[in-house]
Length: 123
Figure (cartoon, one colour):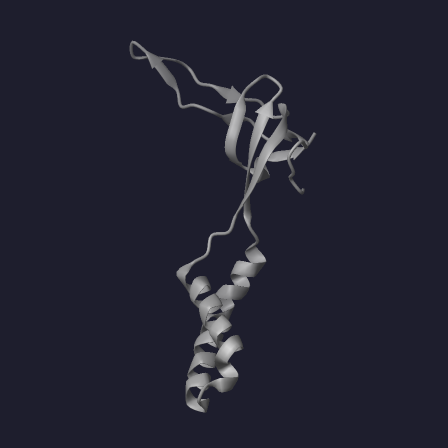
């Protein structure tokens, strides 16, 4: 599902918002939202979590693409080997796609911010 601001969504599962609350040593309850609770998406954030290997691949690949033709053959070969050794990590990063979090204002007034988009379905 593609998330965008203004889209109506609902919770796919019960979602606990707080741990158990205690008063004088007695558990009095906890706060949760029931599956099916509907609301409106207010903000969508895509997170791209790059590893050091992904950043290094991007840096070296850019260097190779920009200056590889001007490098001495042995230096270019070493750079190509290093880029090749990081390529599997780069491919995995590309296939993973971004992690999406959303801010949803529920019809009952609650706001859930930085929630993983996977817990919502279209309303």
